[in-house]
Image 1 (tube, rainbow, N blue to C red):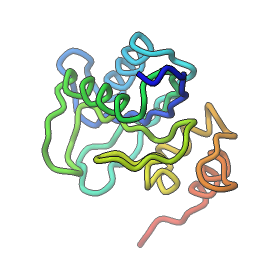
Image 2: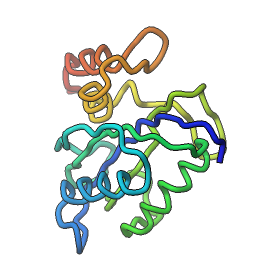
Image 3: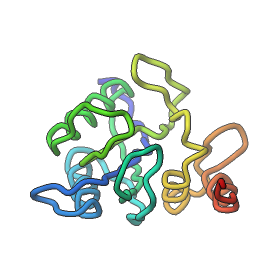
Length: 163
């Protein structure tokens, strides 16, 4: 434990049913409740449904939440991965279907580069399913340089689909 309280932006996704929590939106809802119980939940975005990318199969339910914790980033990642395993997440194809995906999108500290962890998430500013929900709860959250979550979400919303 680092002793200091940090604010984390956690991206949540699911595109596979769970025996107890049902469809992906139910899995995300349950994960939000679980993270609220384990940490200090600051705020959570609405759950959105969107198309899978990169060959991940079924469509996703996604949300972003802000939580407070005194865990350092590597410890937080370890805690999130343990929760994923409790929900039945198994190692497999990188872009495969998953019951639960928990990623540290960003935090209130400096950039982090450690084994298996990069904060801010390297593709955060390219993913509307993260930037949009983050903008819904923290529009002024600084993502990179002068850009905030609302700016990035608006820019991503104006993109034309690839042909």
